[in-house]
Image (tube, rainbow, N blue to C red; front, side):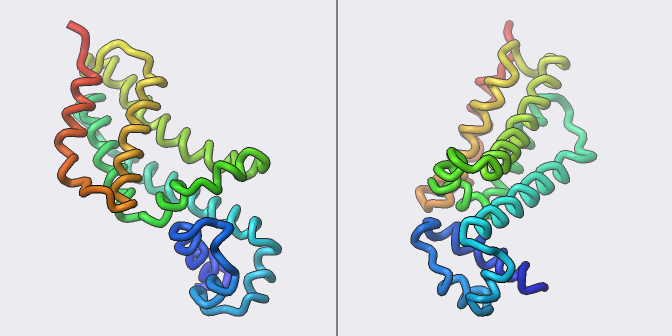
Length: 194
C-alpha cells in the first residue's frame, strides 16, 4: 500500500472518530506511520486531506451499493426495498468509519462554503435515494407498492434507515433487534392502495 493510501485510511478512521478540528496531524502521523511532512507532501492542507477522504468515502460507498444492486433480481419492488434496507444496515456496520464520518457535523458545515464537499455529499445521498426510488417505482409498476411520491418516499426510507445506522454506530442500540420492526414499518408505509 502506498504512503498516500496509508494516510487516507488512517485519516478516514481519525475523522470518523474525532471532529475535524480536534483531530491533529500529529495523531494522524502516528496512526499512518508517516512523518507529518509526508502528509503535507501528499495533501497541502488538512482541508485538502479531508476532501480526499470524503472523495474516497463517496467512491467506496457508491461502488458498494452499485455492486450490491448489479445483477440482483428481486421478486418485486417491495422485496427490492427490503433488500436495500437490509444492505444499508449491513454496509453501516461493515463500513462503519465511512458512516461515522458522514455522521459528523463538519462535512455539512464545510459544504456550505466548499462546492467540492457539497458535490461529494450530494452524490452519496442521491445515490442512496435514487436506489430506493427505483425500487419504489418498480413496486408501483408491479403492484407491490402503493401510489405515493416515489422521490419523497425514497427520502423518507433513506432517512429512516440511515438514522438507525447512526444510532447503532453511536452505540445507542442493537440494529438486529430492530430489523423485523423496520421491515414491517416499511411494508406498512409502502402498502398498495386497496
